[in-house]
Image (cartoon, rainbow, N blue to C red; front, side, top):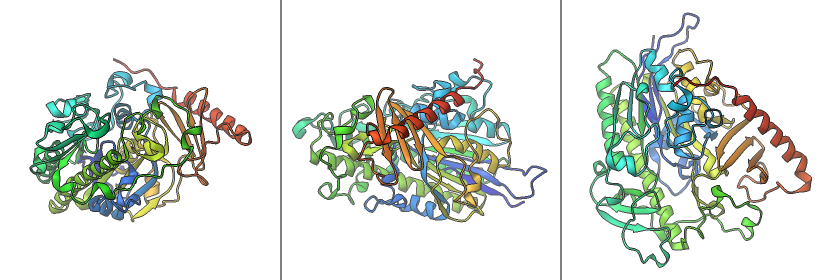
Length: 477
């Protein structure tokens, strides 16, 4: 049997896979997952960005399947990762805070890596896969909200974060740029750092991944390697050379549309605006510059991991997945960061490269929740009956194949997104967008009498979906 390697480009995991008796087609061996933190699809060249340099991720996309309509299940790190790794919607588990999801789902349910581990895979985590606080856990090298049952071995990658030597600045709540240096904590701080990649958490993560990939070449077990990069999560810290291609004055901001906010409800998810963060146009451009520098840093680290896979001779039997836990706003509608359930925050990059499958672009709706059953299927393993994702592996051969009519994402409100319509439901109010005519979501039709029936229909579909996914067995402590 020809062995394939499953590369998940957010987390790398190696695995040896045996085909079931009923199947004659060959299965991949190893799995590599690479997951970036707070990465919007709009920052990647393969998703249409013409400024930010991401040649390694773009190359991976050209070799695999790029999903153009992939969505997270929560626009916040912890709940999104718990959902992806345990296979449940956050609404079903109530795993919505600083958690791995283990307490909420119970000890009787297997995570995705745990399922592979129980089926003969050597599972490894490097840095942030389940939730870790950034910069708190990363700076101190703590495990964060990890799930020990998922892994054979784990490695943390401490880094200096905003304390890195270099040129630092604070961009939010700093009118006139009077405060000097990079403020600590989870905020828009920037450091153009002195020194090389290995000063930083993600440089260490890439180096450890390279070391392990070569090491696993000589082992009998297949591996599932999960590689978690923390950039471009704030603080935006990267070696100075990654900033050089992006002069701040040449950074373009999304258009500022007069009256854009007249029909957008103000709620906790829609409050991270330029005005509330006190960022002038120059600071906004400097923020985009630092974000792009951080993305290029991650792209370079991803390239090192993929190069090791090639050099070790394992690329032909490894499945590679690249994704992020959620998207990110870079000034669209004058919004910044995550938490909102608008398109930029809910949509994620997702690339799946499987040996023997042709390159393609798939425009069908998919969810991060779908990775658990899809990888299990590709590896020739049983798909646990209790999980709520759907196997999307047929899309790798036929990108026109569909498994979902809608996706569900939670944040400060709930997104129910069909191919044409997007309902952002906040309870008593909300937003409705025609994604065919208005893909950038500028005209909220929620209160338009012409679309009142459409709102009612979508709200009823959302209600039915929530009732459906709530029916899971309680977890055992």
